[in-house]
Structure formats: structure tokens, C-alpha cells
Amino acid sequence: MRVDEVMIRQVVSVKPGTSLEAAAQEMVRSAVGLLAVFDGGKLVGVITDRDVTVRAVAQGLSPSTTSVLQVMTPKAFSCAADTSLEEASQLMAYNGVRRLLVTDRDACVVGVISIDDLVSGAQVARALERGQAHAPDDGGLSG
Image 1 (cartoon, rainbow, N blue to C red):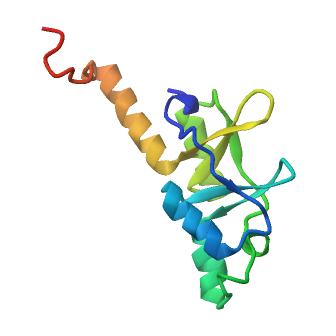
Image 2 (image 1 turned 90 degrees about the horizontal axis):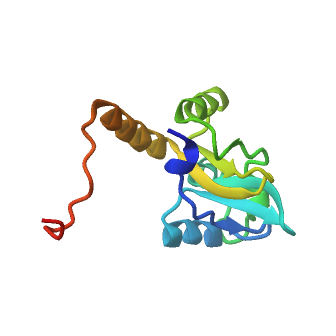
């Protein structure tokens, strides 16, 4: 299976000057643990729920006055949409990250894949290989 088959296509982003409080509220509102950080249309990093807690809260930084720029991870790890799940998991392990941005052929961010997505995708792939995958229940409409 490929990354684009299991990735989350919604990429939520913030600007570098956004407060940590606003970024955390966006994470809650969007039910995500990673926000892409764009400055003038250019990707400049990512901020994760872990960045907020470990880099900011643990250091006693004020969420309302500390900006995303101050605690974000400036290096955003990514993979291509056609990367295999195995390759993506190896990239995550090698770089010590739980999420990767997913890019298209033009290097535009088109999604996010997490460890949870990899696990789900791997389970589906194994089921398909064993012939155990079933079509979704249609509520009896087909029979």
C-alpha cells in the first residue's frame, strides 16, 4: 500500500506569529496533533502537540505570549504520496518522528500521515492479502 491510500488529506496550518494558545486551540478544533507552519506560502516548519508541551509548557513559557516560531520544529520531514507504507515507517523511525507531511510531484503539501495511519493501513493490507477484507455493510441494499 501507498501513503496516499491512508493519509489524512486535511493539512491544517498556522503562521509563525500565531500564539501557542491559538495553535493548541486549532489542534483541538481540527482534532490533529500537527500543524504545518507557512510563512507567505512557504513551508517553514511544523508544530506538534509535543512541541507545545515539551518545548513550551515544560519550560514555563506563556502560551498566550509565546509564538509558534519560538518552539516549532523548523525541519519538516516529508515523503512523497506514492511512498510505500514500509518506507514511510522507516523514515519515521530513522528521524524519530510520529508524523510526516506528504507531498505531491510539485513538492506541495497534500496530506499528513501518522503512525496510527500506518498501522491502520498495514492491517488493511494484511487483510487484503489474506482475502479477509469485506465490502462495507450496505444495510441489506444489495440483496
